Length: 249
Image (cartoon, rainbow, N blue to C red; front, side, top):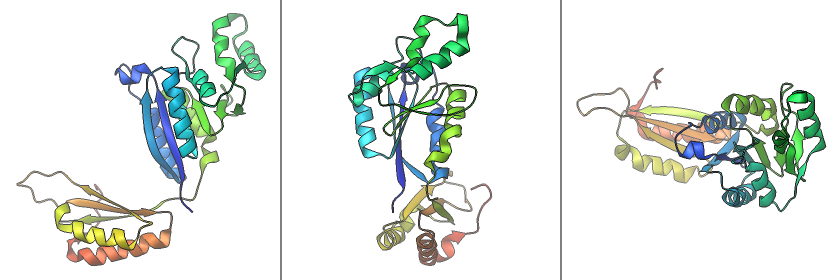
């Protein structure tokens, strides 16, 4: 059985214009891998509802999990919920539980405009996140998260256990050779183990340097036995070119 797959849609003109640097996709890269979920796509779009909706339809149909970041506040450029509703042909309705939460939290300070954040697609499921704030809205397999990195992290970490899958198994080899010199041997391993991902990552060095190793090879799969067999074959093919592990690798 293959890995569960995920996609991330980062929403906001501020990301595309450089006014804000995205941190949320970087968090998901690390966390999803540790959960055994294969992140397949990261898309960044501006605050254009039709474009967001079209992208969500495509990502939802081709991935097990989709995560959005940004565009869920009370201002004119917060169009994520409208786009989610449009993507799946749903109405946008004011959710009584969310409205009650907002009224209880803000009391007399509540601005009517802020109630836009209680408007969600009529097919929404609300996941409890943390006791301090808002639940996480989920429509089909789309998980709608805020753009503020601190809040994004807190909410995702509260629900991350829902996405746990069988772990990835990883082995590494360090090689004292250039990629071109070992490419043919890598091809042999790739052909012999089609279910294993073999990565090759050269290390930068100046021409007059003699580095201890030049290429890091990674062998990865959900099948631990296949990883061990592929690594053994690779090490055998490379022979003395393999060097001992480097703590700084």
